[in-house]
Image 1: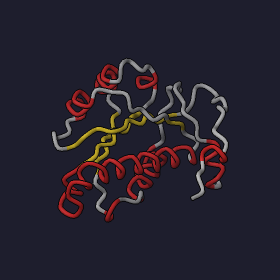
Image 2: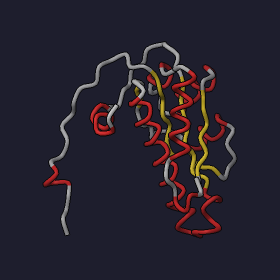
Image 3: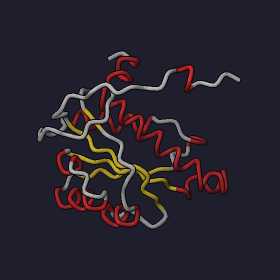
Image 4: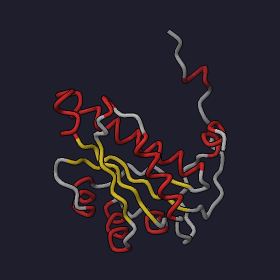
Length: 171
């Protein structure tokens, strides 16, 4: 798929078919994550792949019962890993760059999934402490996004976007 078609086709999907994601497609998404740019190429993030029904249920609970988390065959949890940025970038690395790195990696996963005919939705509303415990991440890692991935069970609707005149400020 052409990159600009991928961007146009990407929608937030909150209903998934029970169909599993093929291992080769999952591998392509994971490779895209690994290719995401990061501050100083430090990749100051960790990604947890969750497919276990019990953990998915716990993530659902930690995310205020957003039902689509239970429907998706897999969930990726992106954690900022501040220590990977700290030595080179000090405070800015620990407070900002590691979060940016994790969110860029999540965006690459979203676009790769779309290019493969899969769907996703960014989940940012959750209890960080609970998510960290569910996935077994160390205290030093901060969960910043969850990304359920699967085949859509609903057709997305186009939503209005701001005009470029309103959004872009030429200075």
